[in-house]
Length: 494
Image (cartoon, rainbow, N blue to C red; front, side, top):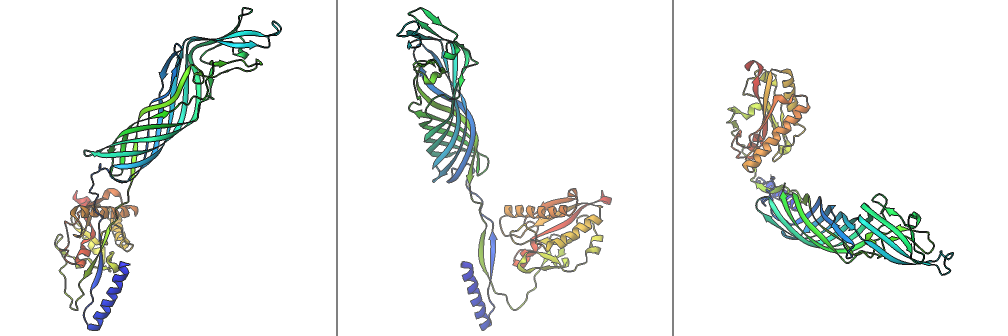
């Protein structure tokens, strides 16, 4: 809208000037490079972050064994974390994640369990009322491992603070929901022996595997259907250290943990082996976490992870500044366009300025004789010119560069040629130096694409240090924005 209003005002002013005979003012637009990021690379920043890290630690299926039953060993597992955080201030933010973890816990059982099982109703051939029996399980250094995998969704509040020149400290607390995916147990070592005794007739019964009355080693007791609850609520926290790789990417080291509230034990069998039903037809080992010998089953994890954190940020855009130029006077004043650096006159290059000032093109100058007079240190051909704040070639520049390509192909004795790029004085010294290097590389890439050997080309950016004139007017600045070709080495002069 501003540009439309400006254009209308310009037309009105021009019309008014035409009526009065006064020259009309001109409007131009200057592109100013985007301001540099002045914040320190490690500064705490507002914005959107995503992260991913991997590690592990003490991921424990936590429970307590009954007295005199044995001991419990903690377990370890892996953790993978993914998440999103939004910092609404440089220091404080909110976040949500998705964590995957595996948990383990190992029971070391070494005891004898005797249970009054009941009445064997099928033994009526001995006693019409059936026979009472006792059930005995003997655990001889029997080791059983329970494994659980789960996903966790934490939601929390987080804090960050810059430390020194490269580091950032972080901390947070969260509440979470854990969904258990898999639950299984497996015997690892030792032996379990099960037997039944009928005290009335003093009859011990062994080796009836179909009823669970046998011995079991580490190789044949496992199940993927451990009966535990599938969800749990937890609370936790973390501390982290971030190392800034760039202004948007951090390498992170995290220490985190979650404690699940409540008990996920679903049932509590009288014994580890529920071998008999009233019809003597079923037998199944239930696992220590489903028996009365185990209490308060829970999942606890404390560990370390390492990963990356990325901050989304918009790329700074150049600013366009509008300037009102003085009107063009009726009298034409010749400008001094003497090339002070190379001691030659810019008019000798035979160039015309294209509309909008985007490039210079050859205006019919015969380069053949000029190229035949080649010598080290002299420019060849005509310079390639660029638009303000641009390192992109206009289509009309290709004709000039193709002439240089032809020259290099026909003159293999030109071993090295400098592609030197220059700017006007608009912008900082550092920015102009970088812009000139990009311009030189643009031209070199084109020449290489047309078959010129890369080793014959030396791109150099001089920034604004070698102007052809004093940059006092727009047309003089147009001439200073250029790329030139200078012979560095000839074969006969080696």
